[in-house]
Length: 580
Image 1 (cartoon, one colour):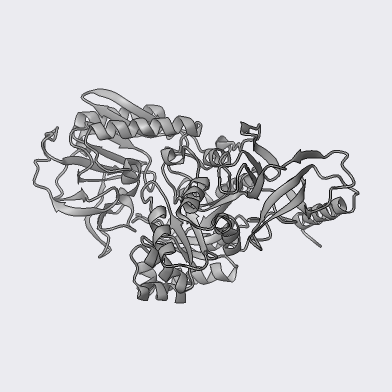
Image 2 (spheres, rainbow, N blue to C red):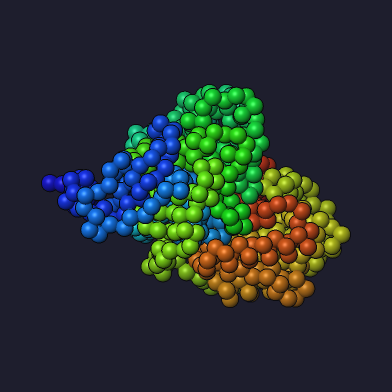
């Protein structure tokens, strides 16, 4: 006996055929369309019939049955498939629902998302229920199965074990394994990790790597061990080498690494004949980077740099869908595909004037429609952070001899602490600041210093971090206590205090990690935060990523983690966390 889902899909498919036979009227017809056929890379004239969320016909005919059909004349427009972001991190202050709403307006109607925060915030049953709820939205939301935490947890097995990883890989909304930041462990002989990779591939789900600066030898080993894709090329030559080795290559353009113009220039200079196995990604940029959209911005750069228009559109549609084995669902304007369609005023202008997602208008003639993704976060117990313990002055004791020295936004080296850190306030002429990582449940702490983040700021506290633990940075212990008090009151977020005053706060009332309001509001708040931090001596580009990656052990050279201060290269804990 067929399962209920198959019965439903059978009925749906029979209904699609009935539209062709004239027994059922399509819900929408885009007539006189010039659309990009991504299979032949040609611009063709056609009438496009849509029933509910699916494209059912693309060709010369108009339906005989138009009883309930809306007909839109697209004579002067060009239609392309909805854009796909193949590598989204949907928790960078924003929440996945609001990110999807915002970028869909600009034509990105499918997100393939990191699931890391669901591992930390939700039990498996609730996480899978939430994935199912996202599947009901007009924007297509797919997910990864994480194999590692990209930090040093006190109990890694609790979050990443064979039972849970394989259950994630079995979920229909999960379409890849990765991204694989723990590849050094794989090379060192971690057979459990290799087993997970094999299981992903057996289920037809590719595994994505994270291989910055990897040599040809390392990349070859990764290919032999079953990894299919990588987005860490930092030069055109690195991207081409990955292509030659058989990787699907994502060209990155993010707030932390806006590499796309340079990558494309260098690849085009080598006369690369095909972009068939190339995609583009914004790799989880911070909010303000998305003010004017997502993949539409990458497309604009690619077209401006001289990538053939048809190839450029395929890089954010067909190529992605093909890689993830979703080509029968996404990435093209063809019968049976989900009706994700962008309507353009010019072939070479990737910023749509109209957007359809699953056949519903997200944007129409540059005006907003009523369709917006909506998730009931309370149903999953995702709400304000409840901190039932207090930060004490006794927690602010700093005696470790090694601090963290910021080389840029995210690269950190160790340095010997020479400043007197027994003081209540570190003088402004010193580049050092107190750095404290606190367990969100109040059980442990790690104390050291951070150099290069601020010259004079009293304190910044953030419940937004790699693991959701509390990051405290500042010159003044009293300001750290003040910021802590306010952080508790607002239910999590980012709080900046200076000389006894709260200067800035960004409530992150969805688990202490995500903003509950609209993207436009968040973008303005992020701009304010950056301005404050610049005034206090932050000299790099992306302080949000600097805070996030303090614990990220997939980056060199030293990190502050749940286990303590960790030497990333040696995988050694230099100074362990202290129980409170």
